[in-house]
Image (cartoon, chains in turn yellow, red):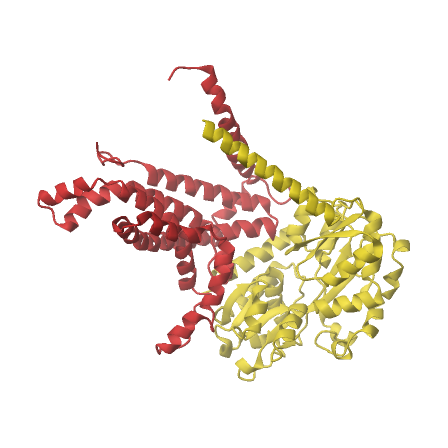
Length: 357
Length: 274
């Protein structure tokens, strides 16, 4: 009995020491002070040096947290608990968050740098008049491939993914809309199709691609492509940019039938506790030089037109990542299809994955 | 035991715990399973579960869980047996258990490297003349990694029940003219069957709901009930359907518990014979 009591006392004492040490550490880093903002962003989606620069410039500490899916992020914001001041949802998620009243309308008098955003990327259908969101990065969905591991395939058309020469080579992204989108695009249907007939047809066509599919995975694909473990992957432009920066042999192409044009956007969620700080952060990130540095670090395409003049010529002239307006004509932005249709997409995608061998 | 009120008070924390963290969550899951996307009361989720996709999913999930359990058992039983024969058996046991302290995800990532096209396994295959093989993203890699992860959990209960066998019983069996096969079949196996059953339990049930490994090692070519639940909650956001699959998973688990915990009549109990 005595042993148990002294054991329990020891555990309690150690716990208190750890708690105290933790408190001291956080205090020293300034995480307890009042002027903090909590930024909730995708992983690897900001230049960490900029966070430091912001902290020094504005005297506001940044608590930085990351998420890996729009849905997971929305769930956390909906439940409350943490007071996120900034988040970066994708376009359809902005729409969903708006429907669920999770966003605060933006006051543009506090964001003078908004004028730096290319008008082409403002007032988009998912958020008319940018009432709740400002585009942060944009990009496309396409095919990353390594010509040295292939026999001359070029992927100018989505159809080439069905080619028998790619048996067990293709890596797909584990996301229903992107994968079904390949099939929809190749059939000439809209990426926002809600017709069961079209979706059924697209799934049937997709299933014939099965023998070519090596795996359906997430971010791991970047490493596999860099290490020459994989030769063809359906991926997002920024991810392709990451691959290319590590392995110069890789190329990226958006097939001619068209593809998805997506946006990730800065918003202030309803959970925000330091709204003034959030505005300062947004304005800071929209500064041309800051945005240029961030875009060069992250590798996705920036909608900040003023930033382009601060960036490497080579990057902004690259048609693969900065397609001109004519090329953008073939691209389609995802609409929020509603949970019902999202369920249909995912069930068809599940059926496709179940059929893979 | 006397019906001492103080004894009942001691039970309160456990009762509260069970109520809050076991019973209540199950009830919440069951409750959610009766709602569709727009929040209407429905049995549609259950009807949907028996549609072809989810039925096939359940079947394949059971098949892989069976394979994983089977290979874990085939490897673990002899290992546990030889462990009891070694000199420093606690040390060896510790060495086998240590890997299970390492985070599951870390081990899984390590396998991505090991099994890659340019990983050590392929380098070895190359040198012995078999040549480069696609190991990652196959049924084989999935079962292999899962078995590796579950082996310590299978070995422990089997080791414990083997270790408790009184050696005098084995001598007695030999003295009475049984050969080693007979001794194993009639003495050792019946006395360790409970260990095997609990080993099967702790492997089969989690194997039904494995989810990270299905993506990282099997490239989503294997989909388990666990993956399906994760997708329903996080991607499709259909909590009703996710809960319905979870309800079935709970039912399956319960059935397996019942099947593997019933003591056979007349079978000798575990532990030393006094």
